[in-house]
Image 1 (cartoon, rainbow, N blue to C red):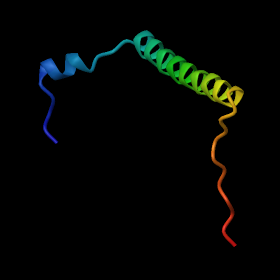
Image 2 (cartoon, helix red, strand yellow):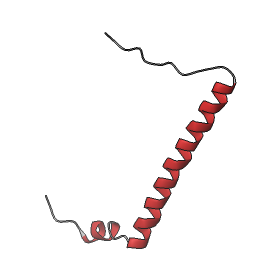
Image 3 (spheres, rainbow, N blue to C red):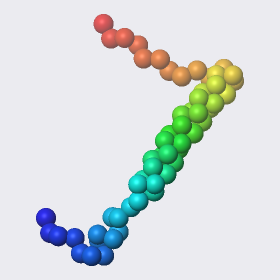
Image 4 (cartoon, helix red, strand yellow):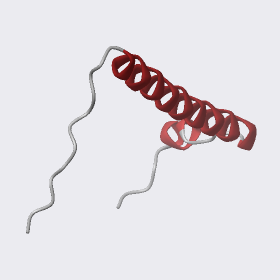
Length: 58
């Protein structure tokens, strides 16, 4: 691998607070998506639509 240029080194300089903020935002996004999936599934089941279940192969 080649050495990074000064410009590339500056690009990767991130403060720990910025890393924590982005980590919190990503986990928040994950939580929001999981919650949305839960709400959508409950809404569909309320209308009588149920997810397919896998049948066991014997």
